[in-house]
Image (cartoon, rainbow, N blue to C red; front, top):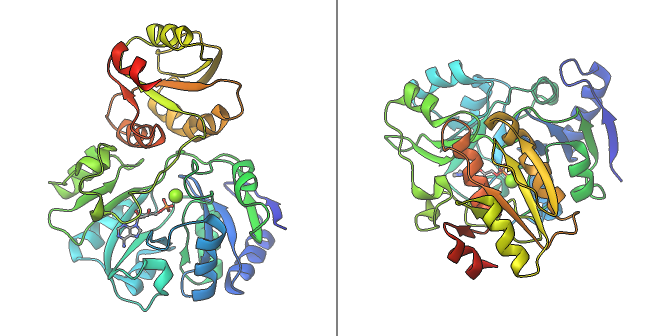
Length: 344
Ligand code: AMP
Ligand code: MG
């Protein structure tokens, strides 16, 4: 059974960090907050512990983990970052951006899914940073949810999914951004965006110049998805069907009612109409990102038969929101009333 430790997100108690760090060093699993979502951490050099992450999450073995470090120097012991990327990492870390680099250290096979590359990130959350520092080892951590479910943005989500099978959960309340880190493959020139996140494409382009954005990074189609291992899997999805609606939401609710279906409406921005259930996600893009996964989890607790959500502008963190929404919907996107009649 998990030991739940409540910590202050900005100034956690030293004893609590030390206890969690001891568990990591002893090969245990610790769920901890980052500025993006909660991670499920193990000593990145411990084969058995990192393999256990896959087991408790039900994660396919070909979906590699992100290795979390507390400094650029720690990252450079594990991966080879080109000089200009080291300069950039020094400016943007700690932060919600992950670099895929050539692997240098001998990491357990499970961590990198046997790839010659490793994903590296230094998280901007005091609890995560101090945990890594105290453990004195990089921490391999995917999101602390069951594979396929929305990532956890508060401790209750972690308990719901993994409560029985992890050792410690550091509960620091809600995470700050609510969507997973931006992932950039810097082994390619120009670099390739593998997953949009809170570190925006606009910011990336101001640092790197050109950045390639494959269609799957927007959550469109699966064609070139082989580039990003793990991205092909069903992600973030509620059990109930979710449809993205690109036309008038009121009309969409009427169409669902014609079919005798109860509808949950995810309200975003000023796009909000009455449904059988209304889930207020947020009024601006940052609020939407922060509440998105909790709202997706809530869909399954309503009595609705189907959920509908509007789209948001693909600017800033909006690109990440749309990527997650498209995947969560299983690519059920209705551009017109006819589309929706066909999808429902
Ligand atoms: P999660 O932390 O659960 O969001 O998962 C981490 C994601 O990072 C995986 O799903 C992969 O898509 C990506 N990733 C990790 N390592 C690599 C790598 N070596 N190359 C490309 N993508 C990676
Ligand atoms: Mg995940």
